[in-house]
Image (cartoon, rainbow, N blue to C red; front, side, top):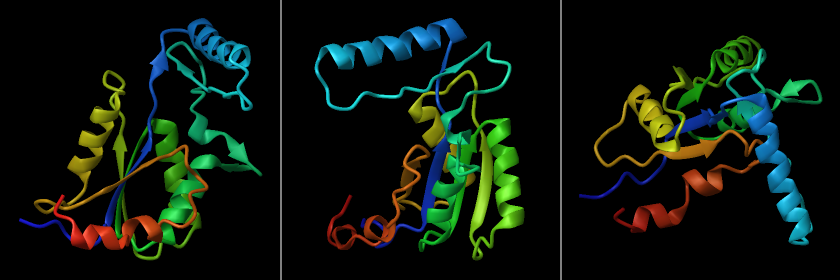
Amino acid sequence: MRNHPAIQKCILSFSHNRAESRREADRLALAKARREIAEGKRGISHLILRAEDDRIDRLKFLFPVHGIPIMCYALGNLILSSVREIAVVGSAEVRQVLELFQETVDCRGKTIHFVPEDPDNLMLIGTLLRGGEALTLEKNELVLFQPGDLPFLYDLEKVVQDPDIRSNDL
C-alpha cells in the first residue's frame, strides 16, 4: 500500500489551550520569559495564552498585523498553494474572521470547512481528529497540518510537492 504522491488537503489549526484564569495565564507567560532571561537566551518568547475567564478571547491568531488578523496570512498562503481542501479548526471568533476572509478574498476554488474547536479537548490530537473528520480523506492520504502561528511560512509548495513524498511509503 503506497501513499498518495501529493498533499492536497490541510488541517489549519487556530485552536490553542486555555489557562484556568487570566492571572494563571499571565503567571505562566511571565515565568517562561523570566526563565529564558535567566538562561541568557538571545530571544525571549512572547507567550500569548488564552484564559477561560477572558471576556474577549485573547487568541493569538486573531491579533492584527497591519490591521489584518494573523490567521488571514496563513489562510492566504494556503490559497496560493496547490492544496485543494482546507479544514480550519478554531473558535467562534475564528469562524467570523474566516467568513469575512471568504467574502473578501478570491479563494481560487478551494474548499474550506470550518470546524469548531472542542473547548473540553483543546489538545493537538483533538484538533487533528476534528479537522480530519471534516476532510474527504482517502485511505493512506497524506494531510498537511499547519499550526496557525506560522502565518509567514510562505512557500508551501516545497512542503506539499516535496519529491521525497513520492519515493517513500509512509
